[in-house]
Image (cartoon, rainbow over all chains, first blue to last red; front, side, top):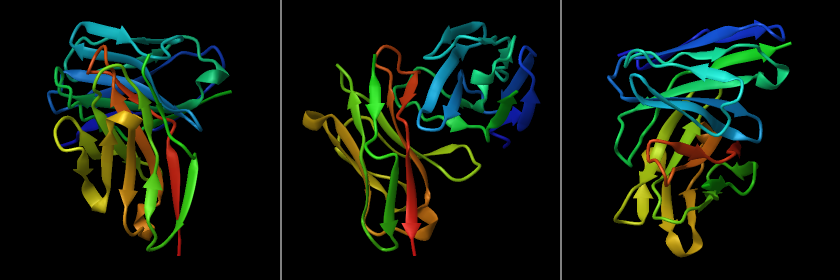
Length: 114
Length: 114
């Protein structure tokens, strides 16, 4: 079982460049989400999805786009990277509809924007 | 909006000493509460969770937490710290408007001194 797989693990971008962080899960989880982790800020929810074709904004959605065309994949797109988006990004998934929403996390993607 | 606060961004304890990591939350409805742990360069994993019922919750690796509604707290404890407990600890709560959304606190870094 691979669990939640994130690629790439490391990425350096220049301001204004675009890129996509990939997230895939093989647990048939309906719910998927993206967080960013910054020192002293904990994890902040960027976007989430409760199923294919359904996405919604979290706490800090600006500058990021998502789509959910399949149950397995939930890519995060940065259309025009800014230095403020330098962070570690985590994808997480779980079964949906239950208040006991135990998240399974990927290993993270460290992004640096110069 | 819900929020989670963790008192102390960094806590140091001696090996064998009591570990106490504090968490307070804001919620207008009974929450579902979690503690996650992050070891260096890894994703997060669940330590324990509170849903309903018994307010003292036991988790993995000897950790436990007590839900106190009157104090809106969910502090994490372990009677005797081990070197392997050194990690970042995050308190989290399911969002009251959508249980699928999980909101994290800023985290507490635990150091264990030999």
